Every structure is written in C-alpha cells, then in structure tokens.
Image (cartoon, rainbow, N blue to C red):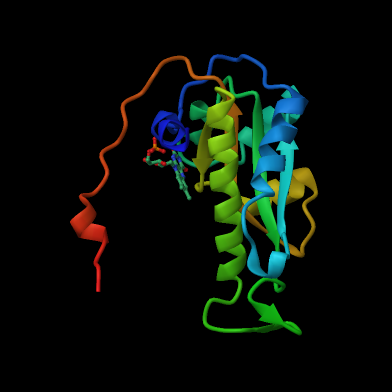
Amino acid sequence: MLTTLALHRRSIRRYNGQPVSRAELETLVRLAQEAPSWKNQQTSRYHIVTTPSLLDAARACLGGTNPQKTEGAAALIVTSFKHDIVGHTHGQPDNEGGNGWGWYDLGLQSAYLLLQAAELDIDTLVIGIRSAQQLRQLLNIPDDETIGAVIAVGHRTEDVPRPPRKPLEDILRFL
Ligand SMILES: Cc1cc2nc3c(=O)[nH]c(=O)nc-3n(C[C@H](O)[C@H](O)[C@H](O)COP(=O)(O)O)c2cc1C
C-alpha cells in the first residue's frame, strides 16, 4: 500500500554492506520510468556505480559528511537529465521554467524510484551535496546531461525516526 511505503521510506545514513542485485537496481529504474514526463520526453538518465573501487571513488565526489554516510551502501545512482529538451521547443525555453522542467521530471522519476526501493525493502539516501564536475569526469557523463542528485542504495543498519512534517495549514490553501 502506497501510504505504508511512503511512511516506511526513510533517508538512511548508515548502511550494513549487504548487496543489492543488478536485477533489483533495474527494477528501481524500470518503475521510475512509469513517472509522467513533459511530452513523454523521458530525459532522465541513471549512471549506477556498483564496482567496489569505483564506488569508493564516486563516494569521494560527495560533499560534507556524505562519504561517511554512504559507507556500506551497495550502489550509488548518479541521476541526470538531457538538458534543453524538456520545457523547450526548437531549443528555446517555453516559459520561465526552462530546464527547471527537466529537474522536475527527474524529481518525479526519483520519487517513484525511492518508493519502489522501499517496496523491495531497499534503503536509499538522496544526496544533493556532491561535485557534479568530479562525478562527470570520473564516470564519463556526457556534457549534454545535467547531473542531479546521487542516490545511495543499500540496506539500513537500524531504523531511524521520521523527521516531523509541517502542519497541513502551513503548506496548503483551498480557494
Ligand atoms: C534534493 C535532496 C537533497 C538531499 N541532500 C542530502 C544530502 O546531501 N545529505 C543528506 O544526508 N541528506 C540529504 N537529503 C535527505 C533529506 O535531508 C531528507 O529527505 C529529509 O531530512 C527528510 O527525511 P526523510 O527522507 O527520512 O523523510 C536530501 C534530500 C533531497 C530530496
């Protein structure tokens, strides 16, 4: 049930080193593909690192304490999108959103991916503090792709509490 999955999903910052199979990782991306996208352009891309030595090198591209938080994760998924397509017609932005719509589509797909992981009892951490430049060079990510978040994938060492959400009246208005 979706509500149960959404409540079970947590950002996990301590992983136990257990593997996640290639078939499971493909399942995550396959479900992500079911998200809606601008004119069904499907510009989101996934660069999945599982090779141990490359995983360490990719973790070193993360900022702050993120390298420590991803120790024991089975994979890092570097997400990206082909820019200047979504939100554009003939290379020109359709409105003020511009490539923001590419980020939007990537975010939608990422949400699906996280929930699919939760259903498979696989844990995740979305990481925004990372060096896109270092990741691009390390993983040979093409220049026509904008690099988004890195999603760590693995299995939790322990349960963590749910960070509180704002009251509905702070974020919602009916008109
Ligand atoms: C776009 C984005 C970037 C994030 N970047 C980081 C990060 O760099 N490091 C980190 O520890 N958590 C990061 N997070 C996780 C958030 O801190 C987390 O989702 C939030 O505290 C709510 O907790 P929950 O995911 O368990 O519900 C990020 C989340 C999002 C959506």
